Length: 180
Image (cartoon, rainbow, N blue to C red; front, side):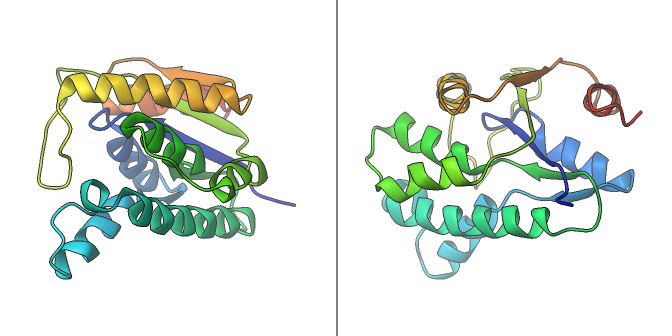
């Protein structure tokens, strides 16, 4: 039996990774966001912002990583498995910047289907830019709209996570999943 795959998504700086860390702390199996890892690897090669320099290459690396996470989550013995972002996030970001991508990206969205998708809205009170997050808050709001559109176009019922403390946001997710 496959594990349930649950995506936590949202624009940059919405608290996704913080919730994933809280879920890990509570003993749940989680796969953390890989875009920072891809960005840091590119920096080691002298490319400051791979997504800005070569968005298609960056997205191809993300796609490969997220596909691997999906397969690993599907085969994981624990149930459920939480993922910090899903395959459709890649298309949403590419659409946000107005770049084209191969049909294989679309096929991957169709072939890697998640059981639940929780979305976090942009929250200005907690938004912070850093070395890997180049977007400002207005851009984060635009990305959120692209995420909504992309996930909905693949027939996902997006589950909102309200603004609250990390503990309460995590509890909300677990209550919706009947895990609390």
